[in-house]
Image: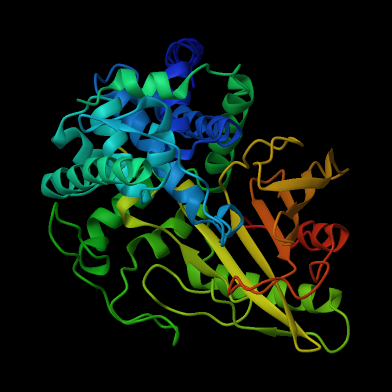
Length: 163
Length: 283
């Protein structure tokens, strides 16, 4: 990579570091793992950066890399979640159908990975259905249904937690 | 209505970053060097060959459509309809050695290496994890390719080398009780090789990061979970670009409660296997 590309890469990564870490944290809910995901993602980005640096869609590509790194890490046997007979206590409340903020992460964690990703990309990253579908590699209909189920699930779990 | 502000509020205070941008760039440079050294025609030659000859040989993916399948796999354990494009293409990027040959070579190499480290009477039996995404099951410590076509990005033409890794698993039966071992071999840069920072459900009982004379970086660690599961792990990043990850558990791959106090292989034994000079992707 040319020096100018390296400088631009460093500048780009520094500018996006916080947003990448926040997105990674929402996906994996552990700051150490989130930083691992970001590290792996920017390593992958490095290789393609000269080609991508002037592409206006670069942020979308980075999100896609991050999401896939996360999904891949989850599949690996040493990252596999351990089964437990004791479920973590979910503390949350709901008011007028809106999930209280303090319990949002707990509720998000209870979703299947791709549904969680759909909700995070649509609501947190404010992406369109089409953009989310491209990142997730699925149809726009799937994104709509996954997001709707995710939001329904959030509301239902929040309601159940208050009963 | 939910909005991004709610998520930011839920995230709360963000701790200082531990992401090392310089290290990531160094890994990126190393990966680029490996590709350049191993196969200088990656960007041109292989693409041309595939464009000219691959149309009939590799399955084509249409947006939103189904994949056209190629002929049945030569291996008996693989279903006839599994997409072969990335399985085979990936490893042509990795070097001149055909994909199936790499799998066979690693399998023939690792099985005896593991067997040698096991006590008398221990046998390798199939693992519940030895199944690829197409449903094909594999023998104990038989390597198979792990790749998810959904990860193909339009921007990144062809399959990414780093999206692919070889995996092998086995349960280890001894005295009617089970342990297990998992191995991956890839060119993906290893995750952060630092001690500490384990999730709340486990305790790190041992950790060491060091470099051996051959230039390999070694990350060896042991962890104990709250339910009594113990694991020993070794990650070795070899100078020629291969990353090996070995993990041994004191329970079988079915997820039942551990039956042994310790995993069947200790950290030194795992390290010995990973550091074997023949355990490389690029020859």
